[in-house]
Length: 171
Image 1 (cartoon, rainbow, N blue to C red):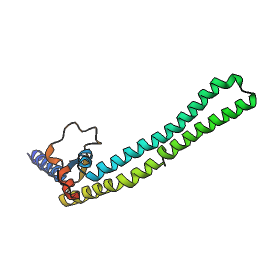
Image 2: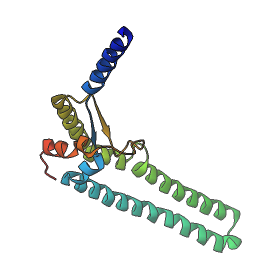
Image 3: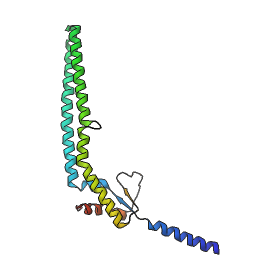
Image 4: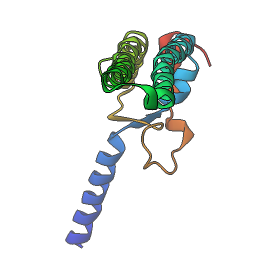
């Protein structure tokens, strides 16, 4: 009898402790789609990507044309002329590769632009999530967009709309 009462009290205490933890979900993709500044930033990034890609392709095409010209005329060129043409082709290919690295590399213009345009938006979302979590007493907030292990979550615990309101946007 004593063991069963102790077991019931222990079970009750464990269930109370489990209920004390509050969890919430957010969907950053949904939040970002509802922030006009994010859409504008994305558009700017796409335009810059297309512009940079076009510039790289122009130089790569020039290198390709130099190579085709070299192949067509190689039988009539002297050894010195061949070397000069080969060096010219290699220099043009290196120029294209360097420009590509300048624009698209890990420290390239596109990364800097993304940092300048997108990071402030992501930081404001983080601050809003942090504020709402502290106000509502959530122990854990999981991002549905990046948590591929979530199979089902009750929509009642999704606070994405609350985060949008905190940021000053309505859904």
